[in-house]
Length: 220
Image (cartoon, rainbow, N blue to C red; front, side, top):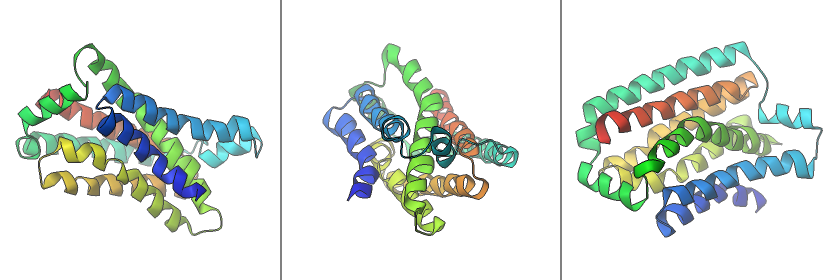
């Protein structure tokens, strides 16, 4: 029950912010507040292990190969996203509907630059710490690593449906969850294979940069 609570929590926060509150700033506050609070509570309030042990469990350990592979996969993701945006943006998006949706979600005006910065710089760190750090370690306890990678990737993909379905044109909106799930598998593999979260964070950051670049170049 506790694990289900942790797995569904981010989706619930994003649902409250986007679908109920119709506000990206509110969604960010609830969503990132959850992602930050749970690992911090484990690190500093419960203190089940020593701080250094907890940080290692989360994946905060430097591994040169992990950084290199993470950077390479991130650059590849960035280029693929940019190319897809250039070739398929007119097919994947309805510009009028997208502009209306972003206005309703308050992803406009003076806040836009700050929201983009959060998505590029803060989002990859908090998502990776929560999914590939905290929960991946928790699910791996007494279970196969592949089990933990699959389920964290699945629930990581779940809340993306709340954003990609309204943003993309049908039927591509549902299909767009596939690369999100695949990215979760890759980042989970990187984390467990090389014992570090840093490569996954770098890769995730470059992928999100690609998404925001497509938005700025072809959609805004």
